[in-house]
Image (cartoon, rainbow, N blue to C red):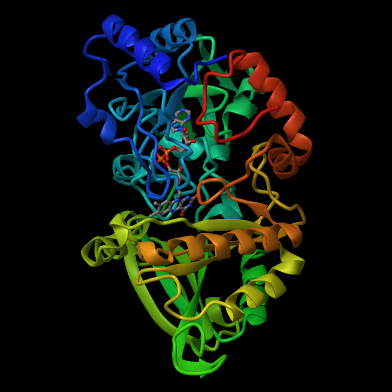
Amino acid sequence: MPLNEPAAIAAAARELAGRFPGTVSLAEERRREFETDFGRWRFRLPAAVARCRSAAEVAAVIRACRELGLPVVSRSQGHTQSGQSLTSGVLLDTSRMNRILAVDEGRGFADCEAGVVWRDLVEATTARGLVPPVLTNNLAVTVSGTTSVAGLGVASFRHGTQADQALEIECVTGEGEVVVCSRERERELFDMVRCSLGQIAAITRVRTRLRETAPRVRQYTLVYDDLGRFMADAAQVMDPANPAFSTLGGLCSPAPMGFRRIGEGLELGRGMIGYGVWLFPMYLTVEYRPGEEPDDAALLAPLSPWRHVQTQDLTVFEFARRMEPMFEAWRLSGYWEQPHPWMEVVLPWAAAREYVESVLANLPPGALGPGGHVLLWPARTDTSAAPLFVHPGGDIVLGWGVLGSVPPARHAEMLAQLDLASELAIAYGGKRYLSGYVTFDSPERWAAHFGPAWPRLCAAKRRYDPDGLLGAEFIRFP
Ligand SMILES: Cc1cc2nc3c(=O)[nH]c(=O)nc-3n(C[C@H](O)[C@H](O)[C@H](O)COP(=O)(O)OP(=O)(O)OC[C@H]3O[C@@H](n4cnc5c(N)ncnc54)[C@H](O)[C@@H]3O)c2cc1C
């Protein structure tokens, strides 16, 4: 059992630092860097930070932590949002392990150390006409961070999750053993290390698939004034018999209409509340080579949006980075530095419309703060075979995310509303996506989340991390 008493952890951390000078730091300044995550509402100060440079060093640190009874949490860029990468024990920082070891153009893969950020990989591969099949909206996250969660993107309806793109993973188990696993070798570890949030092993290298790409992307922005029509068109776009579009994404976007009466007087939230009309932008892309521009009219003819508002051409690398201007705006407005308890769920297709419409009906425009937004993410389920990426089943599903941030005074209220929205989504048959605001606090809640995969995950935990050293107490095992 790992230590959990702060004085005992501090003493063991001093011993660890003595054994690994230059790698393990007790400096308060360094530890404070890792006290919180992108969520910025949960805080845990690590007792020590181990900044490792190789799998051998990770293994040596984990073996020593095991001997000393120190809990260990792997951390990449900390873009998770409810303490998934926080610990009061030893924080294993793999950000220095950031070399792209190889790009194999012939066999279509890249070998990346754990801390490689997707942006660097995309820059290296698009220059050679290759691209990772799935990219998340934020390219500043790492190959190990998203392989450990899942990694969903606008191409997931064609290619699944980023975890599905892993061909081989080198990792260090809770026993401090370096193991290389794949679909052909150490299959159980390969299946259980993906999407298990660092609970089974620390990933040190990922071999990830690449696919060929044309150099340019044409992006269409369509707008729907009806979620049902958005979903009907999304289902057409996702039909494997119709491979025209390479990416599909969407938003729920409020057009504010003013304030309406809900009670006596004019006080906001008691007498009056903001209201609006929800619109549903859909973003579609087609890849093309110069001189072979797509036929816009023919491509869009089967679809029935309210309006087609924009067509633009980008390079593949620009398209992958398309959110950077928005993130820059968030930094300028202060949104980036605020707490962000984001809540994402994968909904069964048949129930999705009713659920989304009922939540939006109670979400006044502006309620999510400046920069807040609501994502729509239609996807197919047969594109993913990662056993721990949990979804509700059926052929198609709707990913939905409410990504807000509010001032501290309204924070508790927002968390309560997110809890309600999360419980309602689960009641509708939805499965939570685990990077955001997740507060499952008992083995029973986790068992319900993972369903049939839970016994397998528990067995893998016992086998690969017998002392329960790894992970941020995030997933509660029995
Ligand atoms: C602005 C923004 C946009 C986003 N957009 C998307 C999106 O489009 N799609 C999507 O799927 N997600 C999205 N996310 C969520 C993000 O992709 C995930 O939270 C991702 O896991 C973060 O990666 P990271 O490198 O920051 O990992 P961290 O947050 O540091 O870690 C994530 C988890 O993996 C574990 N972990 C980290 N490194 C290792 C390792 N080496 N070995 C084993 N376990 C490890 C951690 O313990 C933690 O449980 C977004 C987040 C932000 C802030």
